[in-house]
Image 1 (cartoon, helix red, strand yellow):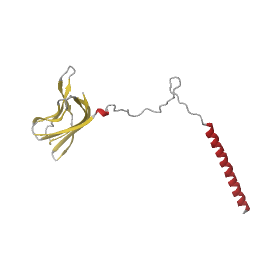
Image 2: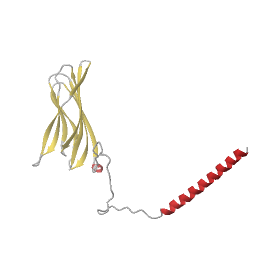
Image 3: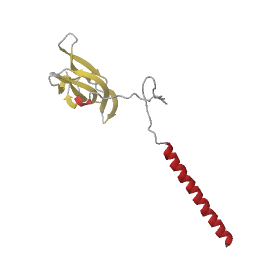
Image 4: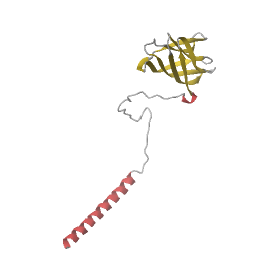
Amino acid sequence: MRAIARILVASVALLAVVSAVGMLTTRAARAAHTSDVRVVNTTGESVPVTVASAPSAPVFADTDGAARAGIGAECDIAFYNGETQCTLANVPAGSVLVIDMVTCGASVAGGSAFPGVTLLVPSKAIGGGVYGIYHQLSLAHTGTIGGTDFFGAATPVRIYAAGGYPVNVLANAAAGSHDVLCTIAGHLVGE
């Protein structure tokens, strides 16, 4: 029993000595670090910077985000044959509609000729004035269900539509029942 008591007393004494040394070392270390740290970033004393690796994708800053007003529009054309059109958006005068995305879907009777789809956008001419630009949309066959062929496309773009004019979708096809639905997404900015 005396052996256990001696071991216990020795352990407590050792723990007390280690704790005292730790506290003294900590106080001394704190006292040694009382001066302020000086950071200088001049041409004479620059701070060294090391880049581990470049980012895998570019980083973009939306510097004019506060000036944007988001807009989305759609129009649906159901027709039998010939050419027809619908208006997607009327761009307000004094603004420019920046079209960022165009999506279109079409359905035709199975085996019928696919309707051509065109986005007609008013654009400012370099010499002045406004003229219509015809953007041909390429729709891919996505499948056939119940004798009806379906086509579609979703295309990111950057198209500028002049203010004071409409943005239209044109569709044309030979005889047969056709349906075309197109949408745009973008934002308005000042001219």
